[in-house]
Amino acid sequence: MPISKIVARSIFDSRGNPTVEVDLTIDNGPCFRAAVPSGASTGIYEALELRDNEKCNYLGKGVNTAVNNINNIIAPALIKAGLIVTEQRAIDDIMLKLDGTPNKSKLGANAILGVSLAVAKAGAFKKGIPLYKHIADLAGNKEIVLPVPAFNVINGGSHAGNKLAMQEFMILPTGASSFTEAMKIGSEVYHNLKNVIKAKFGLDATAVGDEGGFAPNILENKEGLRLIETAIENAGYKGKVVIGMDVAASEFYVDGKYDLDFKNKSDSKDKSQIISTEALTNLYKEFIKEFPIASIEDPFDQDHWEAWSTLTSSTDIQVN
Image (cartoon, rainbow, N blue to C red; front, top):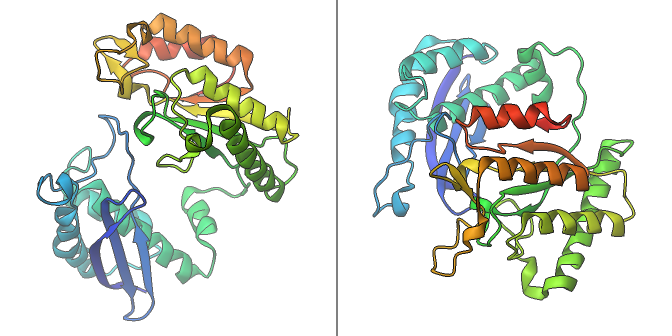
């Protein structure tokens, strides 16, 4: 089943921004579609999401260049290669060679990923198995285990228009006996959290951020953890749910310090919220001591390796 047609277009993502969608056809028959996700906070070492940067076109967020790269460069090359869709690595390698940059900046990671995802879906169809099993085969995984779902319940940072600096506060029902029960626990804690926030801050405090978590206009990150802890207890799941955080600290790293009030550009800015690396490390240690924290993602700036090492060596939780 070689690729017979690839067509890309621009669609809107969940934030109302343009993104890339790809239709891939095999043997002039079945069509497989993939859309590319986009992050609000990205590191300097991540693969490049190619945007048009034309202010008159979706405020610079257009993806026409990436779409054209698929239609005019990637599609002809893959069709000419005549590879079958189960040859994922070979197909991906062709795209990487066409790009030729370490961060996929020529064709765009959003162009390459869209095609790669569509190929994976087609490959699963060709083998007659679900997509997750096909991906497991590609990765060489013989045993398949469902992960614990992580529910993003409070949003801050670049994901919300509130004061909260840290980006994602998640709950993980590690005490659930099945994935079905984990989903039930997550749902019930989420709705209890809504009631907790509403009772403390009023009806207008339960608006949601980019990732669907609540975005109360609080400044203290520890307050977010308290709200979640209360919601877990109110739902009756104390001891069965842990908390994960994606801090995205590079977003508020300024001149060697961390600004926990970085979204406040006014003269009333709280200067006490601009803290040292040591102070931020100690804050994380307080979080870990006081709350059932299981993981912290991106706790420091992406180049702040010494700080990462210090925190990792001082705790048993997952730091990544």
